[in-house]
Image 1 (cartoon, rainbow, N blue to C red):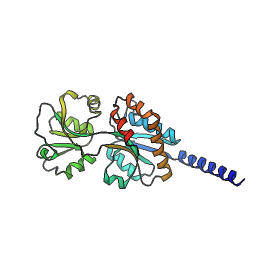
Image 2: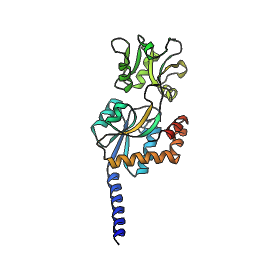
Image 3: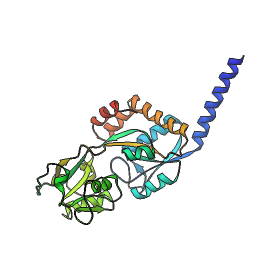
Image 4: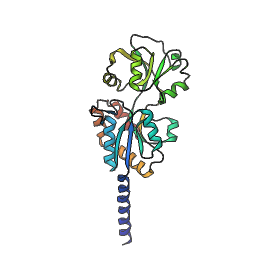
Length: 262
């Protein structure tokens, strides 16, 4: 009889926990970055990671929505509200201590890219000093370049957003752009630029390449754990790889993720 009561009590606790989780509306925020997360013609959130968020919310029986906004605002909202999560944030040593990383969702290797018609003798990042090197203001890449000795007084040119950054390169207002290239062709086409005009100039293997779902440390630990476990179940079910194929993002990322689940 005692064991029966205990079992009923456990079932009640689990059901109550799920009810509490489902009553909390989660906000997943991100910038407009095709094809990971962007707004369509009707201003609705779309993209590979938007669909992944939907599947994770369904798996954990949680309520939530996706909002697309400028990166600076998204990061501010994320840090200010406990139920706001970032859809894709680079995992760095410093951020690992500040935030709750729920699991990797994408891998993106970084490069310095430039126009094909311009040639540079680049052996490493240090050899790019003196050239105009650009990234988006406030991104981790901004701080990475400053830590590597670049400065806005000499050779660091900052842009307000990814589209402006790429337009600067094509208008020759900068020499090199620090970015990942996995979906760069599609991103360039979406803003009216010709991908055939650029090329990779230098690989940056020491630049962090894992994008994660990330929660504020104030988010309920039980809810954070549920989201993390739900993400892993979606990966293991094969739904993640189906989304990669749907968005034509390549299977290398699926293989990497299968080796780096956490």
